[in-house]
Length: 453
Image 1 (cartoon, rainbow, N blue to C red):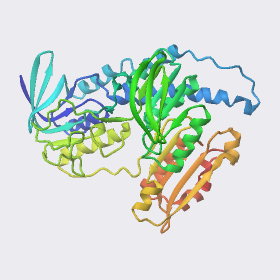
Image 2 (image 1 turned 45 degrees about the vertical axis):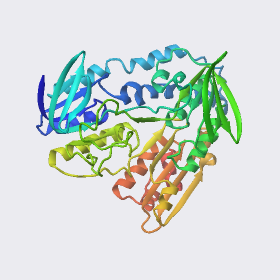
Image 3 (image 1 turned 180 degrees about the horizontal axis):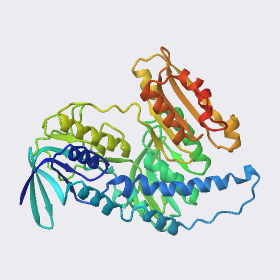
C-alpha cells in the first residue's frame, strides 16, 4: 500500500502534534505515524503522572512543617499503592483523546514503526503489513528513551517509566545519575519513607543549571535524608541478598552500596532506533541528527526535527510543542525561522522546586556580558518565615547597561510560579527597574520581586 501526503510526522507527542496541527490548519494533507500510544512522554510517562506524585510529596512536606505553625499532627500514613492508582487515572483515556483530536482535524493516524526508505519516503510496518508514505516534508518527532548506560549489570536498572507504575514502595533506592529525573523522584521517595541515594559522575548535580541554585537543592535533598555522592565512577551492578549492589569508585577508593532497587537517573536521549537515517539521507553521528538553526536536517531539506528527538534543546514538553509548531510554520511559509529559547522557563519539581529562565552566571560570563548578580538567601524574609520555608533562594543576572534581565534562578518561594514573571519580563523587554517599581499584592512571594532585583 502506498500513500502520498504533504507532511508526514513521525511521533504523536507534543512536538509531533504541534507540527501536525499547524500544517493541517494551513490546508496541507498530514499523516502522523506512531508505534506506541498517542500522546508521547509528557501526558503518559512523564510530567503529568509524575506531578501527581510530586503533589503528594508537597503535602507531606507541609505536614512536616506543621509544628512550625504550632499544629500538632500524627505521623502521616501514605498508601503508596493507592497513590499510584490515582496517578494512573491521569493517564487513562489520554491516548484515545489525542487520537480523536487528530481524527477531528482530518489528520491520518498510521500505527506502526517508521523507517526511511528514501529521502522522501517512509515505510511503516505493523503486524506484518507495510505501508509506504511519500511526503514533501517529513518531521522526526520520535521523542526520547532512557539513556543507555555502558555498565556491567545495567539490565537490572529500572527506569522512570517503571517507577510510575511501581505499586509497592521500595525500601531503598539508588539513582545512577543526578539529573532532573533522579532529583524529582528522589524527593518524592525520600518523603514517602524510602532510603534514597544518588550517585553522580559529574562534580555537580543538574549540571545544566546554575551552580548556586543547585547547591540549595543539594543541601535540601540532604536535609530530608537523601545521600548524595558526586564524582563517582560506576563499575558494575550485581544482584545481592537485599536486592542489588552497586560497585563504584569515589575519591580514589572502591566502594559499594546495596538497595532493593537501582534506577537509571542519567536522563534520556533521542529515540532514533530503527529509523534508518542513512536511507533518508539524514546526516547524524549515531546519537544526534545534524540540523540547521531552523531545525531542518543539515543534509536533507525535506526533513525537520523537533522535540526530544533533538539534542540541542532541553527535553521539556513546552519546548517540544514550541519546536513542533515552529517547524510546522516553517513548512507552511517556506521560512527558516530558528527557535529562541532564552525566555522559556523551566522547573525541576523537587520539593521545594528549582525554577530557571535565561542564562546561568557561567554562561553569561562566557559570553562576555557585563552584568550584576543579585543573589538572595530569602529564608529570613518575612514571607519565607511566615510559611516556614526550609529553603528560599533567588539569583538574578541584570545587564549593567539598561537593566535587562539576563537570567533568573530560584529555589522555593513559589519559584515554579514566580519564575514566569521573570520570563515575561525577558520576552517583552521589562527591565529590573520596571519590576522593582511595580506594585504587587502583599503579602505574596511575587511582592518580593523588588528585593530580588
